[in-house]
Image 1 (cartoon, rainbow, N blue to C red):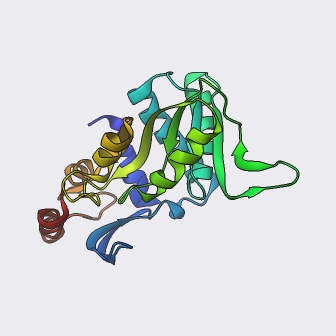
Image 2: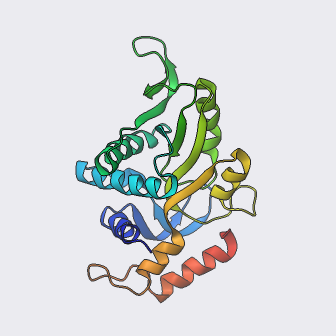
Image 3: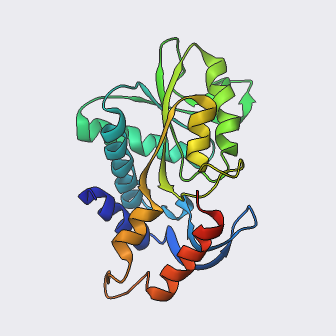
Length: 224
């Protein structure tokens, strides 16, 4: 595992974005873990988060993109932070763009925030986590309606590695199959387990034998 991936897992723990316990997801599934990007609230946290996204994007796509698109609302700060970090880490300015939930009809009019989109733009969509793909189903038509653009791919922070709505593939794999672009994550739950299982971090074991068993049982039902 690349060093930055282990650092990111520890960063999620420190930021309380990744938690372990008993959680009921929006889907109704009972999960032994939960990830919430809304826990990144300080300047330092957002700076670091942007750097992890930028590194993962550079690893997967190099410089073969022009725009980082963050779907409203959680994707807005993600795209801004990642664009800033990409410029700092790799010396290349990329644009950020996000959508509004409702089009604005005065001042800075339209459905978009940040950069506009133009013919030929290569776009990477940034999200926190994808479980059903609903957000992308809403976002993709908006992006494609703006100009003749190419969506190069999707980057999320954590791949939960669960079945998507289709019931066989993971949500990320379903999106790849449906729209034809690559879908990747900074880390997967397999990475998380590998990193934290019976390994103390700051004096605490986050995934012990009991929790590992709960995760394994969860994936027997919902794993892709």
